[in-house]
Length: 271
Ligand code: BTN
Image (cartoon, rainbow, N blue to C red; front, top):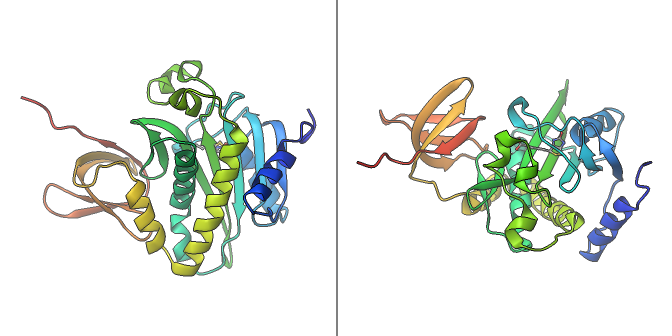
């Protein structure tokens, strides 16, 4: 199918308009893309405007964090958004968290009890329903662009995903026991993203930090294990710092500040 032959981009634009948002840039839709992030990075290099959106019905080379593959059959949401944050760049390190927050809020608006697991997995009942792949490009003058890739399991049932992920994921339609329009989720994510992006520009990272904390899985004060930078660290989850790093308190009382990685809760062994 050629680009937006079925009017998906136009429908998304109408949904945004119905929420009072005249979308300020192009929305590109294709039936199949290797990866919407790769496509949008290519568009960014060619000068695409801030807030350009790329949407696909399926991806053939979808990518997740930490070099993982993101299985992308038709039925789920695959969307990337281009930002061109103004200096200073330091405040923008929380952008991946902003995207997670926007997604969790969009799903909550559909009626899901969505929670954030650091750094930006969106969870429902302990299973993953969506994730964010944020990719920044810098030049001689600092940060040039950030592509926020958003993947949401909307309609594809976990047993139709690869066996290595099936047990740890869920999908929106199964959780809500009803059909859900991907574009309703897409437009809600974009609307919340604009709100948080402007709040971050105006008020700085603390505004994101506190909203993120309030939507996090309830593990503050609990034992967690993190895989970060090739190391395994165990500690008590204490806080999120202003840059979006996770702070753990280690057994010897010192603190570990994690900037990337994967974290899981460790339940104490029973006697
Ligand atoms: C994660 O590992 O949790 C992040 C998954 C991000 C997947 C999305 S789908 C749209 C965009 N294009 C990609 O190739 N990846 C992101």
